[in-house]
Length: 138
Length: 218
Image (cartoon, rainbow over all chains, first blue to last red; front, side):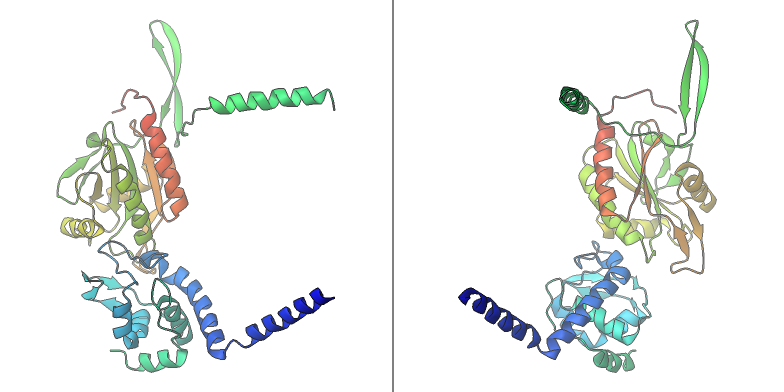
């Protein structure tokens, strides 16, 4: 009898903990898991399963400092591609990244995945944020 | 059931023995034809296998590369182009593993043929090799006449390639790695985008390296 009560209380506590996850956390998880699928189909061939890039040909996605300083132009890079020289992880990369015509919400999801994987930790990049950033693309 | 038991035990033992001396050999692919010839007055039937024919291309250093220079070599062939946005990066990420495994073994080569020779000039191929971190003469990036490359891809290495301006990058091609033995016969074909198949190829290359040398077909 006592045992049952303990289990019952445990279950109640557990369900409280789960349901008490904030909306923010839930949103993050939704973005992150959808983003992981988009990453596999659109980015992984070049940037690798661990975001490691490819030698001096394709930059890695592990440079947290670069991602932070360029946070507002990441959406543009995904949507319209990149061209010319960039400096990542103390190496110069040149060449071309192809454009990926994804919906703003998909861009937000994949960016949330990238900026919170491979050693990066930047929190959720929302689709509102992406819409704002896309309006400023050069 | 009691009568069956010894039979099963015997079968298991036999299988175990068979497994032990079962030396792995790789199949030989391509067309083959039987040939009957007379040696020392006796009629012998031999099989002629499909082999990679003569070719002449240029590598990333500007050196002329012919089929002769591959005599006695095991090699892997693939088809790519440097501006390829889809499967080439993952193919060459996997090929780098093959390169790093065998670059110091000798008698081993990798031949990556560009299917966009107009853009991929020799300096472009050299730059690509440098950036990939490839040096020396184990991995050659080959450029040649487009017709020649396409013909050898489809007819000899059995890899489909074609120009298609409708797709990203402008070319469609299969990402196969084709394994060729010292006699220039096809011994394997692997999906170069799949790390597991590439690991299998690395094992198969070791199997081939352990094969006894036969007369080299010229």
